[in-house]
Amino acid sequence: MKTASRFGLASLVIVTCGLFAAVLRAQVPDVPETFPNGVVYGPKAAFAIAAPNGWVLDNKSGAADGLPCVLYPKDATWHTAPVVMYAKIASTTHEDAKEFVKVAIEHMTKQRAGFTHRLVASGKTNEGLEWFINEYPATESYPRVERVAYVQMPKAVAFMVMSAESADVSARYAVALEDVVASFKYKEEFIGYVPPKVGEKGK
Image (cartoon, rainbow, N blue to C red):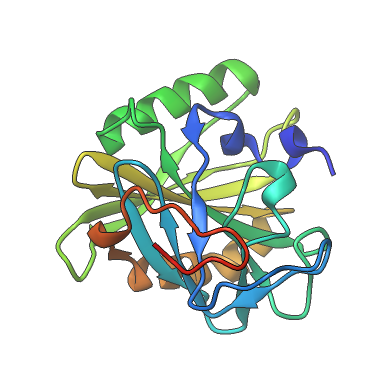
């Protein structure tokens, strides 16, 4: 799988964040570990999300693509699912969600001929953080449909990307992305978290 052809937004300037699972344990290479929820963390922000009904959250399968927090339907895998999601935190140089989206749109407009976008939903989390979801239809040069949820955190931007192989698949699973947003929780205590090495206790 070529990262650039499947995950357009992953190529933007973003900080690689990790996933803190409820149980940290040694992992067997190439064997995915899945969880019902997890925490995505970075140097300036951290947030928790839960897998939608019928989905799993995986902290290994997307690592080679620079995506340490990925989600996909239970009956599929990260590499075979017709629709997948991943969650990240924008680079520390981006603290404003609208500004970050402006940069993303400028980037994709240059990279994809015929690129368009539209706002499909917006609201606030249970904690009062503003969020919105943009849809980025497929183009001739980029055949996947993406819906991206952006959440404005204190001095940081969280974003969750749903990437589907077609418009029909994207529409069918759109509620799953909204469910992830509904589960969103800001986790200040995990900002700057450093996972322990195997055999060490958590810090």
